[in-house]
Image (cartoon, rainbow, N blue to C red):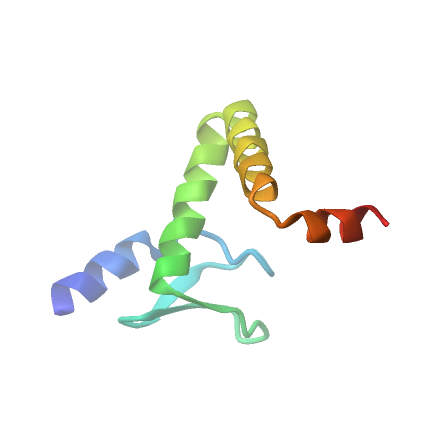
Length: 90
């Protein structure tokens, strides 16, 4: 358990808080929080991992990232029931 927390702390500085830009730190085994006293931003470990993966993909290839987001959006929108699509247009 200690090794996992130490590994988390080593990587905590890699991601800034999306709200204020300060460092995210491990608050517990299941949560991350912003290191700034004035900021109450928190996220789960799963959300932190997703945030890290998406941030890395954006930095590596911005055009490819946004193309994959558009593709995903289009796939999800195609799954919406027809009545919801009609409401959105109105």
